[in-house]
Every structure is written in C-alpha cells, then in structure tokens.
Amino acid sequence: MGLKRPDRRGFLKSAAAVAGGLTLGSVEPALGQTPASGTFIKGSDELIAYGERSRFVTSVRIPHPPGGRASPDGFGLVFHVAAPLQDSVGMITPSSLHFVGTTRGSFIPDIDPREHRLMIHGMVDRPLTFTLEDLKRLPSVTRPHFIECAGNRSRPQHKTVQETHGMTSCAEWTGVLLSVLLKEAGVKGGASWIVAEGAEEVKGASSIPMAKAMDDCLVCYGMNGEAVRPQQGFPMRLLVPGFEGIFNSKYLRRIKVVDRYYMTYNDYGHLTQDPKNAALGVQIGPKSVITFPSGEQQLPGRGFYEISGLAWSGGGAIRRVEVSTDGGRRWMDAEIRGTAYRMAHTRFSFNWNWDGKETELLSRCTDELGSVQPSRAQVAEFFNVPLDPSYRVPGRDNSIQPWRVASDGSVHNGNS
Image (tube, rainbow, N blue to C red; front, side, top):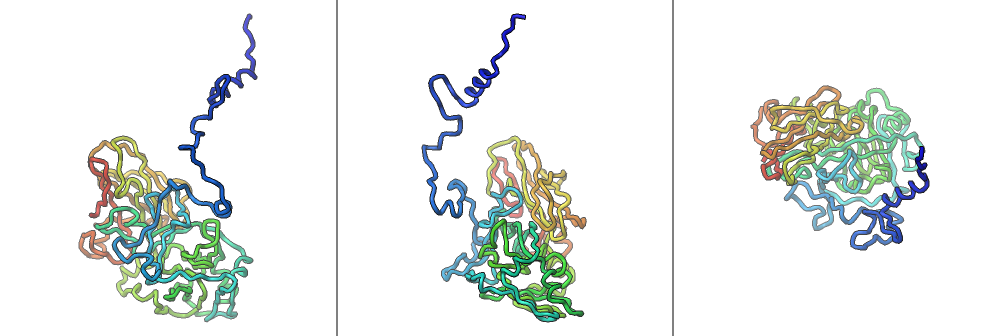
C-alpha cells in the first residue's frame, strides 16, 4: 500500500513533549507548576505534627450577635461565636470553624482526660462511673449531625449569612449511644427523664425526655476524625440530634435518671405554658438558607451562577429543597448534593442565569415528616404577632431568609 506504519514509541514521545511543554534541547516546567513568586512553604516540625491551612484562606468566626459582648472579653470569658457559612462547601463544618455556644459565657475548662469521669445515677439499678477509656472500649457509632443555637435567627441589622445563621454547624460525631450506657445501668420503672450536666464554670445542665435519651443521643469523644475540641466539650459531650443546642451538654460529667422534669439553670427561660410555643421550643427546623449569593457578596455581572445553600431539620432528613429567584412568585426544585442524613446539614444547589435586574432569592425545605419551612408571614400569622422582621417571634424562628440582589450585583439582607 505504500503506507509507513507509525512508530508508536515515537508518537508517545512526541505527545508527551507537547503535553509536558517540552522542546528539543530544553526542559520547561509544565503550566501551573512554577511556584508563585518563587515562594515555598518550608517544612517544619509543627507542620508535620499538625497541619495548617493556606495563608490565602481567611475564613474566620466572629462574636455573636454583631455588636454584642466581645468574645473573649477582657477577662477571657468566651461567649457565642458564629461560623462563616458564606465560605462553607459541602455539609461538614471544620472543627476549627464550628460555632461556639456557651452557658451565659464561661472559661473553657482545661480537663485532663485521665482524670475526667462520667457518672450515671438516680433511678437506676447499678450506678456507674465511666472513664474516657471505658467509653472507647464500647461499641462506637459515627454520625453527621448539626447543632444549632436558639438565637440563630435573622434580624434586619444582620448583613451576612454568618450573622443571620452562623450559630449552626454540622460535624461528624463519634461516640457511644447513650442508650447503651443507660441499659448497662438499668433504668428503673417510672423513670421518664434524665438530667445531663457538664463541667462548665456556669453549670450546663438540661432535662431530656427518656424517650429521646434511649433513641439516638450520643456521648461523643470524637469530632471530624479527631478528639472533640475543648471549645466543643473535650473530653466528652452529649449530642442530642435535632434538639436545641443548649441540650447538647459539653464536658459531660453526670447524668441523673429521674421521674420528672427538673428546673435546671439551662431549663430556666426555655419553658413556656403556651402550647404553640412549647411545641416549637425543643426541636429545630425545618430550616434552610442560601449561602451563595448571600449578604455582602458581590456578583460581577449578569450570567450563570450556581446558587448554593444548606438545609436541615430536627424532624429528620431533608427530602426536598425549593428555590425562588423572583421573590417567591415561582418555586423550583433545587438539587440535593450528596446524601441527606437525618438531623444533619444538607447541601443544595440550583443553576441560575441572572438577567442583571434586581430580584430576591429565597429557599425553603421539606423534611421527611412532611414539614415545610414557613415564610415570615406564615410565622407571624401562626403566632399572631406583627409582620415585622425586627420582632422576635416565639419558638425557634425557622422562617425563610430572603436575599435581595441589586442591579449592580450587590447582595443584601431582604429582611432589612
């Protein structure tokens, strides 16, 4: 045929030269392989022992609420600190950026895990005391769960999603089911509540129904693949999935099994005789918020954007998320990214072509119980309160958060 068979080795060699930026007689680094400005991160014992993030990543937590008491204050007391949801990706919050909630402000206790003990007593057959090592010998579970402070609610003066919703985070928690410990102790008949107490300076204690304690509560010693951090309750904390944050006692040291509701320090101020309020005073959600685009972010111009956000519920897994790009006139299904776990943050996204005109973005979610996140107007009607964003509605405010996109691409709190 007169055709010369190609030299396979020569073809591969020439292809590699093109792909790798090689030229005859010289060798150049491939595109993107030259260190910026010729700088390097020099190895050190500290980096080997425990890594750190890039100096170009600047996400930080902030004291909450904005303009409130500083954290730490002049005495070193720590108060509420909000997570930077605007920079979040996926559904897990890094341990170093997880929000912090404290009981009326406190010092972070420096606890030697070898000396720490967890006592279970009260209406049990066998009062027991556990060390950290005792817990680690028992069968463990690892589950993603969110925690949210009751104060996590939008205000007109809030500018960013960190200010409106930063008092919630989601981590992967590892520990022992509380039911395992209670069964080992032997719960007596008539016992209907437990009181969980931590070792904070201002004693953190909460009354929890026995049905919840025997269901899915965890005594956690692990968080995101490492030990629970001191700000989150080292060496062990209680995790009460889906319940208001104050129930999740840190530095857990005592669980008393009782036959009635105890009025503890934490319980005071979290009770109400109004049945509507009481029904919404323990379990969180369903709730969602768009994290991009959100307050004080800037869209460079009209065109395609991926709207992204988080949804969660104390009623179980998120089953549906809807997004409106026209102020609530039309709702369209968003895509749930990854697995929607029970009582965990769920990432959602929606493809949007912005025409450059002023509009309002909203999201709402539905959980596995069929509960739908309400609008601000629906919440106001339910509680018979003013339709005023500055009014603090009863219960755990899970109303829809609007973000107003101006024609110049700037994004603002729609409640302001």
